[in-house]
Image 1 (cartoon, rainbow, N blue to C red):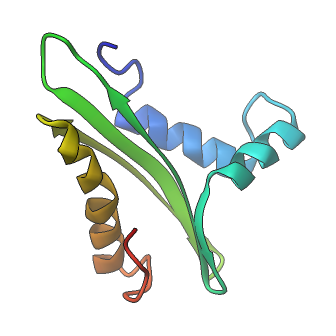
Image 2 (image 1 turned 120 degrees about the vertical axis):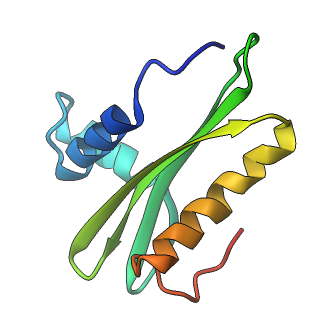
Length: 114
């Protein structure tokens, strides 16, 4: 409950360090988090991510979705924060991120939308 305590830029930097294994945690712990964050895996890419929801009693709720795509030996990181006036708006996070990643050529155009 309340405002986020980490900015989108800080989320991005955290993910970059997690992917590189340079966080101040054991390599095993970082690998476990990388493994459990896999949302989708195909022969040519891996999508990793985590969603969240900040309930803000005095303001519109905030939804977030952070992660990265590994494809062709490269990594693309993303951090989306979105106002969610109603609970059903939470379902918009994944389609928004996928549409942007596809438009940028980061995800193949044929990836499914859950």
